[in-house]
Length: 282
Image (tube, rainbow, N blue to C red; front, side, top):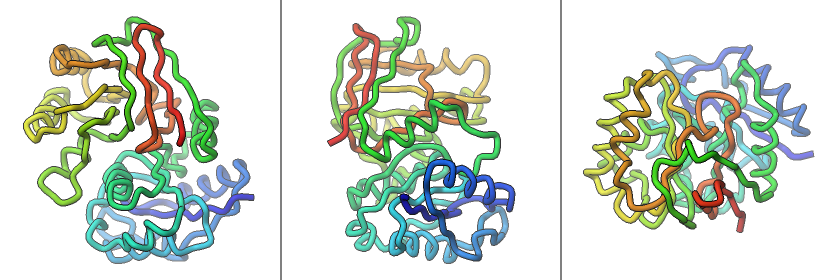
């Protein structure tokens, strides 16, 4: 059985979140562990930044093969200066999470080349679609997978093959101007967001554009933009309509089900003529 370590890097979690996460991991065939103070609360967060940073550092020193985020929310950005990047680089562990955890995933991948999977926060008590579970386990085990899409999901046509990075749009914007900002040149970028007004999504996209984050990007995969307004796709179309490369939207990534796992840095191919994108593991 694989060994897992649960972490609360962001918002505080409930006992219900924790117990659900434990049950799901056991269903997946994992033996799980966590710190005794994982239910800590400090303001909005799962304890102060010192507790949360220590927890993640401890997870990378633990027996676990996979580290699972229980939930997102906010606050993961606080941890970045206090992580043991040398330990993480040498640990060969996998970190799984999404939403607020986006900033950890991209930072750890860029600084250490650790395996970082943009996948479900395991304590989400509404449950998971079978496709979410299957894709997560395939990604953990480095099994290639392919996702089909329809012509109506193509915003810009093209063919691209490159490493993939990205995640929650707001968190990527929040990284700008720091030593932890996302590196996108030569990459395929995937984006998703939750509960943002459509004009705010549009403005953050422009902020990333002005920071050069769409320069030399090879392709774009747009996931769910849940509760971002009925007109969100008008804004996405307006922003990406002249992009020089393939752009697909309505893809099952983000704050809805199914939520497919994206392994940062692995090779992604987008082919709008054949109607698919796929992940190929090294």
